[in-house]
Image 1 (cartoon, helix red, strand yellow):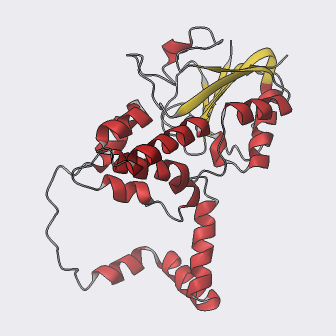
Image 2 (image 1 turned 90 degrees about the horizontal axis):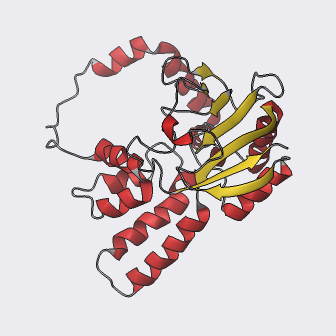
Length: 278
C-alpha cells in the first residue's frame, strides 16, 4: 500500500511518501501544497495531513482536498487533522464562566483560550501573544497548557523556558552595523530603496502582507460539522470523527504520526476525521 503525508513537518515515517515546503529530514520531498501535487491520479491508498488545512484560505483548502481526492485510489482513505474549533470554543466559554466567578487560576486559563482562538489568526509577525505569555517566569498554568497541546506542549513550553539568568547587556561594537551591511548589501539596499519609494507605513504594510501570506497563520478554523461538509463537497463519502489512535488505516498507531510510542496524543487540541473515496 502507498501512503502520502502532506505537510509532514517533523512528523514523518520512512514507509510513507513525505512532502513539505521546507523538508525537515531525509527523504522528505519538497512540495508547495498551494499547487497541484506532482503525483498521477489514483496513486495512493492513504492521504494524510495534520495541522495543514487551517493554514489555507477556504477556497484553497477546498482545492487541496480536491487534489487529495484526485491522487487517492478508489476505496482509499483521507485522514485530516486540524485544530478543533468546537473544543476551543466550549473550553473558552467554561473559562469565561469560571474566571468571572473568581475561581483560582481560571483567569490565566481564560487568557490562554482567547489566544488559542485569535493569536495565530491575527498576528502580524512570528512573535505573537503566545511568545510573550510563555516568557513569563514562572508560566502560571503549565499543566493546563499541556492538557491543551498534548505531547507537543512539552516541547512548546521547553522552547520558552528560561533556565538561565538574563545575559548582561553588552555594548554594541561600532563596526557591527557596517559588518551587517557588508554581509548583506542586497538586502540592505532593497530595504532602504523600498522604504524610500513606498514610505514607512506602506513598507510596513508590505511586510505584514508578506508575513500573512507566508503560510504561518491560521486562515480558517473547522469543527466536526464544517470539516465533514467540506470533505463531502470535495467528493469524499462517509466522513467520521475518530480518535488519535483510531483509524481505518491498517496498523495506524505504529506510524506514530498523531501519537507518540507511549500512546499519548501529539496535538490534543485536534479533531481527527477520516473519509473514503468511493
